[in-house]
Amino acid sequence: MEPGEAASVYGIKVEGQKQPIYGFVDESTLDLTDPKPEFITVELDKPWLPKTETQRIRKTMISEIKKEYSRDRETRLNVQAAEAGLVLVNGTYYRIEEVEWADKAREMAGLTGEETGTSPASPQEALNPHPAVPEAPPATAPSASVPRRPWGMEIALVAGAIVLIGVVVKTMLLNG
Image 1: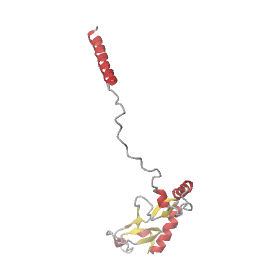
Image 2 (image 1 turned 180 degrees about the vertical axis):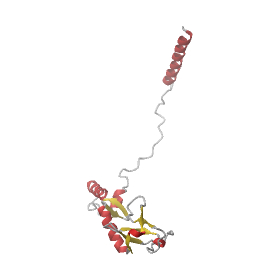
Image 3 (image 1 turned 180 degrees about the horizontal axis):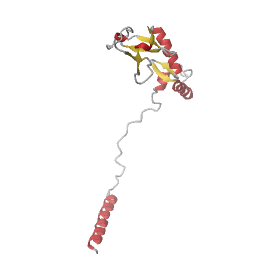
Image 4 (image 1 turned 30 degrees about the horizontal axis):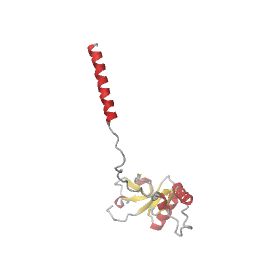
Protein backbone atom coordinates (compact mmCIF):
# COMPACT_ATOMS: atom_id res chain seq x y z
CA MET A 1 0.00 0.00 0.00
CA GLU A 2 1.34 3.43 -0.94
CA PRO A 3 1.66 6.17 1.71
CA GLY A 4 -1.47 8.31 1.88
CA GLU A 5 -3.57 5.72 0.03
CA ALA A 6 -6.82 4.80 1.76
CA ALA A 7 -6.89 1.06 2.34
CA SER A 8 -10.04 -0.99 2.33
CA VAL A 9 -10.97 -3.20 5.22
CA TYR A 10 -12.34 -6.62 4.37
CA GLY A 11 -14.48 -8.99 6.39
CA ILE A 12 -13.32 -12.54 5.77
CA LYS A 13 -15.48 -15.47 6.81
CA VAL A 14 -13.42 -18.57 7.46
CA GLU A 15 -14.88 -22.08 7.66
CA GLY A 16 -15.07 -23.32 11.26
CA GLN A 17 -15.04 -19.83 12.81
CA LYS A 18 -18.13 -18.03 14.06
CA GLN A 19 -16.81 -14.47 13.71
CA PRO A 20 -15.31 -13.07 10.53
CA ILE A 21 -11.76 -11.74 10.51
CA TYR A 22 -11.48 -8.04 9.68
CA GLY A 23 -8.36 -6.54 8.23
CA PHE A 24 -6.38 -5.05 5.39
CA VAL A 25 -5.56 -7.38 2.50
CA ASP A 26 -3.33 -7.05 -0.54
CA GLU A 27 -6.03 -6.81 -3.20
CA SER A 28 -3.90 -8.61 -5.79
CA THR A 29 -4.24 -11.84 -3.75
CA LEU A 30 -8.03 -11.67 -3.25
CA ASP A 31 -8.99 -13.74 -6.30
CA LEU A 32 -10.14 -17.01 -4.71
CA THR A 33 -10.26 -18.80 -8.05
CA ASP A 34 -6.53 -18.26 -8.62
CA PRO A 35 -4.61 -21.05 -6.82
CA LYS A 36 -1.48 -18.91 -6.54
CA PRO A 37 -0.71 -17.72 -3.93
CA GLU A 38 -2.18 -20.42 -1.73
CA PHE A 39 -2.56 -18.10 1.28
CA ILE A 40 -3.65 -14.52 1.79
CA THR A 41 -2.12 -12.39 4.51
CA VAL A 42 -4.47 -10.23 6.53
CA GLU A 43 -3.23 -7.29 8.59
CA LEU A 44 -5.78 -7.35 11.42
CA ASP A 45 -7.85 -4.21 11.92
CA LYS A 46 -7.29 -3.59 15.63
CA PRO A 47 -5.95 -0.03 15.96
CA TRP A 48 -5.65 -0.25 19.75
CA LEU A 49 -2.85 -2.80 19.52
CA PRO A 50 0.63 -1.30 19.84
CA LYS A 51 1.98 -3.58 17.12
CA THR A 52 0.33 -4.67 13.89
CA GLU A 53 -0.77 -8.30 13.88
CA THR A 54 -1.03 -10.37 10.72
CA GLN A 55 -2.74 -13.64 10.04
CA ARG A 56 -2.27 -16.02 7.12
CA ILE A 57 -5.40 -17.71 5.84
CA ARG A 58 -5.51 -20.57 3.33
CA LYS A 59 -7.69 -19.58 0.37
CA THR A 60 -9.54 -22.91 0.41
CA MET A 61 -10.77 -22.17 3.97
CA ILE A 62 -12.37 -18.84 3.02
CA SER A 63 -16.11 -18.93 2.47
CA GLU A 64 -16.72 -15.22 1.83
CA ILE A 65 -14.83 -11.92 1.46
CA LYS A 66 -16.67 -8.58 1.65
CA LYS A 67 -15.49 -4.98 1.77
CA GLU A 68 -16.54 -3.20 4.95
CA TYR A 69 -18.18 0.24 4.81
CA SER A 70 -16.59 2.96 6.95
CA ARG A 71 -19.64 3.45 9.23
CA ASP A 72 -19.85 -0.32 9.76
CA ARG A 73 -16.14 -0.33 10.60
CA GLU A 74 -16.56 2.43 13.19
CA THR A 75 -19.43 0.55 14.82
CA ARG A 76 -17.49 -2.73 14.82
CA LEU A 77 -14.34 -1.09 16.25
CA ASN A 78 -16.36 0.51 19.07
CA VAL A 79 -17.95 -2.85 19.94
CA GLN A 80 -14.64 -4.74 19.79
CA ALA A 81 -12.86 -2.05 21.82
CA ALA A 82 -15.60 -2.18 24.47
CA GLU A 83 -15.24 -5.98 24.62
CA ALA A 84 -11.49 -5.49 25.13
CA GLY A 85 -12.16 -2.96 27.93
CA LEU A 86 -11.13 0.09 25.89
CA VAL A 87 -12.76 3.39 25.04
CA LEU A 88 -11.95 5.87 22.25
CA VAL A 89 -10.96 9.35 23.53
CA ASN A 90 -9.89 11.99 21.03
CA GLY A 91 -8.80 9.41 18.46
CA THR A 92 -6.80 7.24 20.91
CA TYR A 93 -7.86 4.07 22.71
CA TYR A 94 -7.51 3.99 26.51
CA ARG A 95 -8.46 1.41 29.11
CA ILE A 96 -11.85 2.22 30.61
CA GLU A 97 -10.32 2.12 34.11
CA GLU A 98 -7.79 4.82 33.18
CA VAL A 99 -10.55 7.15 32.00
CA GLU A 100 -12.55 6.46 35.16
CA TRP A 101 -9.46 7.15 37.32
CA ALA A 102 -8.89 10.41 35.45
CA ASP A 103 -12.51 11.43 36.04
CA LYS A 104 -12.17 10.56 39.74
CA ALA A 105 -8.92 12.52 39.99
CA ARG A 106 -10.52 15.58 38.40
CA GLU A 107 -13.45 15.25 40.77
CA MET A 108 -11.14 14.94 43.81
CA ALA A 109 -9.11 17.94 42.63
CA GLY A 110 -12.29 19.94 42.35
CA LEU A 111 -11.95 20.45 38.62
CA THR A 112 -15.62 19.98 37.86
CA GLY A 113 -15.84 23.30 36.04
CA GLU A 114 -18.81 24.65 38.01
CA GLU A 115 -16.72 26.72 40.45
CA THR A 116 -14.36 28.11 37.83
CA GLY A 117 -16.95 28.65 35.12
CA THR A 118 -14.96 26.53 32.68
CA SER A 119 -15.87 23.27 31.11
CA PRO A 120 -14.47 20.09 32.67
CA ALA A 121 -11.23 18.76 31.28
CA SER A 122 -11.47 16.13 28.60
CA PRO A 123 -10.27 12.58 29.38
CA GLN A 124 -7.28 13.28 27.09
CA GLU A 125 -6.25 16.22 29.29
CA ALA A 126 -6.74 14.08 32.37
CA LEU A 127 -4.39 11.44 31.03
CA ASN A 128 -1.76 14.08 30.14
CA PRO A 129 -2.10 16.59 32.97
CA HIS A 130 -0.13 19.79 33.28
CA PRO A 131 1.98 20.01 36.45
CA ALA A 132 -0.05 21.37 39.36
CA VAL A 133 3.03 22.76 41.13
CA PRO A 134 4.44 25.95 39.62
CA GLU A 135 8.04 26.00 38.52
CA ALA A 136 10.61 26.65 41.25
CA PRO A 137 12.04 30.16 41.38
CA PRO A 138 15.48 30.52 39.84
CA ALA A 139 18.33 29.72 42.19
CA THR A 140 20.27 32.72 43.43
CA ALA A 141 24.01 32.85 43.94
CA PRO A 142 25.13 32.40 47.58
CA SER A 143 25.71 35.66 49.35
CA ALA A 144 29.24 36.79 50.22
CA SER A 145 28.51 36.72 53.96
CA VAL A 146 28.36 32.88 54.03
CA PRO A 147 31.78 31.62 55.20
CA ARG A 148 33.49 29.02 53.06
CA ARG A 149 34.28 25.73 54.72
CA PRO A 150 38.02 25.16 55.08
CA TRP A 151 39.48 21.97 53.61
CA GLY A 152 42.05 21.62 56.39
CA MET A 153 40.33 18.70 58.14
CA GLU A 154 40.01 16.63 54.97
CA ILE A 155 43.63 17.27 53.99
CA ALA A 156 44.82 16.29 57.49
CA LEU A 157 42.74 13.09 57.40
CA VAL A 158 44.18 12.02 54.00
CA ALA A 159 47.74 12.83 55.10
CA GLY A 160 47.26 10.81 58.32
CA ALA A 161 45.94 7.83 56.34
CA ILE A 162 48.99 7.92 54.04
CA VAL A 163 51.38 8.04 57.04
CA LEU A 164 49.49 5.14 58.70
CA ILE A 165 49.68 3.04 55.51
CA GLY A 166 53.42 3.76 55.29
CA VAL A 167 53.98 2.65 58.90
CA VAL A 168 52.02 -0.58 58.37
CA VAL A 169 53.93 -1.40 55.17
CA LYS A 170 57.32 -0.69 56.86
CA THR A 171 56.56 -2.89 59.86
CA MET A 172 55.17 -5.76 57.78
CA LEU A 173 57.79 -5.80 55.05
CA LEU A 174 60.85 -4.83 57.03
CA ASN A 175 59.90 -6.46 60.35
CA GLY A 176 60.43 -3.55 62.56
